[in-house]
Image (cartoon, rainbow over all chains, first blue to last red; front, side):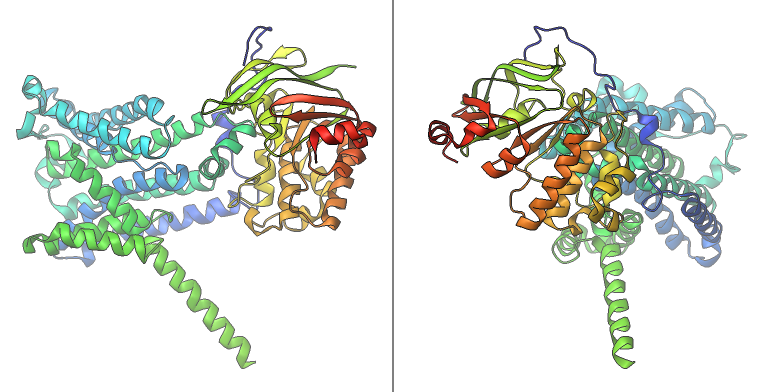
Length: 361
Length: 230
């Protein structure tokens, strides 16, 4: 289009994020009653979940549950982006790993307290997500997938360079150590590797993430994301600067992946290049798909199932084979993943029961 | 009369093939213009070019001022479109679909309530997802979404395509109400009857060029019929 005539700024040039985050209209999104009910349920889930270590006494199983929740949070970040924006990322380990390394460097090299290091790690991963997102969310489909994969791999290569060995430990990785007097949520470093002790921290983080994703999904912003995913061009023609909501979604998603990375580093007290690897990216994406990313808890279920399967099958040496089979089954037979299949099954069962009740009258 | 929308020597191509070859037309405040021509004449591309799809050369002016290149700008400047295909957001409810039309921030005479008065069918199914609506209801929903941005000009791409005659009559009644509200319309149509009923003027396209224009009464003349071969 020529710009020979006077260019004028558009009267309302871009999508206002504040307006986007306003609740959706009553009856279709977030009314006060729905929010209160959701938050009430979250509090119940939070409290009940804190008693899990009392139920699972076996340390190995408790470890599976804790690791499953951490992988589940990473899978939730990927699932949220895929479900709400239609953007499939293979590079979220960039934020997961960057956050884990950030925490390790801040505690071990800079002697920061673990709480300061957590804030730094999550904020650092989020800012990285914002910067990377500013470039990659412009590209749709396969290009986005390839770009995120490339960025994740680039970061992986960066931390293993000999020139940064002093900072990152290169292939040897980096231990996470902090002062004997410092604690995270009342947990000293000596106890943080104990899954039962670490559990409350992971559980509270998970519930907070679930509540945030639920609120975002049901807000006007969530509806806008859905519209953009369904038909980006029509959304743009309706007056949306579709770039802004996508970038917000990507940044939120990277913040959640960063939280998972910080939790991982705390629990393991060690970070290695594996946190940035393609395998970790693949694991988390598979967890999201197998659990079902169209539902809120699907990726979490996928994460727990994946960690459990890993613990049960890795001794056989055929973990990747079984992972591949599980992925094929989920994609071909369980279109909505495990949670989607259970939900569909429940719906069909209810229909059958109602039909029989009706016939019996 | 104020000229709201003006295209000057607009050229566009898809994959190197020229589809608009210097199209110039204008739409004045409150008038309805019928954009007619054979399939492939460039009618849809003319409308889409206003939204930057595809990128074009030439000038596109809204109230005398150049339009930017970003696809979300026309809505903010008072130009809305009801596209030919994939008109609605299928997973969103009727109400949500309509509210999305207000993304530009422009507010005016049209609200969800007044749009439900214009299209009572939509009011009855306001909480239904878009893909549960009939073809006619989807078309009404797309028009309602376009109106939510309080457009000065509403572009309609084949609004009656695939609809039953009784639904077309309902649609014509609604479009007359929109005309009466002062909104200018650009109507891409295959049905001459529809253009004659609603438009005062027509612009005929052929092979990406304006081949004829004039009062809609002239649409029946042999010369025009031969040019556009509807």
